[in-house]
Length: 250
Image (cartoon, helix red, strand yellow):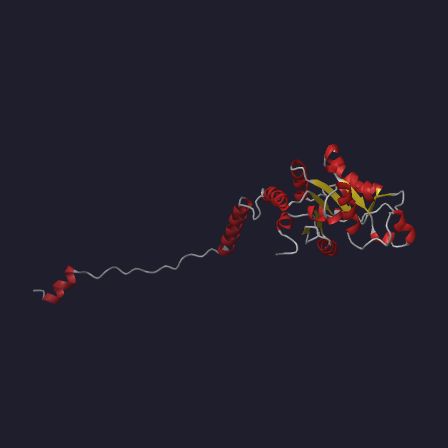
């Protein structure tokens, strides 16, 4: 006769033993997984929303035009090198290198902005230190260079509307030179001469003519003369942020 303990053992047999088997690791599998994850992230990045929406430039231009009209600005004067352009001309360009200089050398923001200014009946000028004074025949400089630039990127009708004053102050420090410019003293080392000439030609006050320039000295001098201004900080051509930031900051 089985006692109670033996009966319990028969009724409830011990559970089967299970051997824990470690997961199989394929050599290099971790590296392969990391490579696959990076590839997925790269593909996602290709379709991700850009940090700066493509329309930001257009929206900045529209906001700028609206703001300056409310401010009473009737004309905007741009510096040439590193404001309308991306790279600097040095004031003159050799004829055989002109094609390279003009190629892809316009600020996209400026290219969008110019037609909008004309559509809003805001006058446009260029004040540049690029000067044809003593420019050799092998080079194109001064107003001729600026005209060629505008003719390359814009219609002839639009180009004709742009008023250009091209003069490098260092060239007009001696009496004979500055008298030839109808000045009674050496030309100021700023855009004062350029802006004054444009204001007189348009019949506008300084408060109605804005300067957009990449040289802080030119911008500061214009502010002292009563001009509203915008400062192109990075000297890589006009950017949307430059249009939206008042200078000096308030």
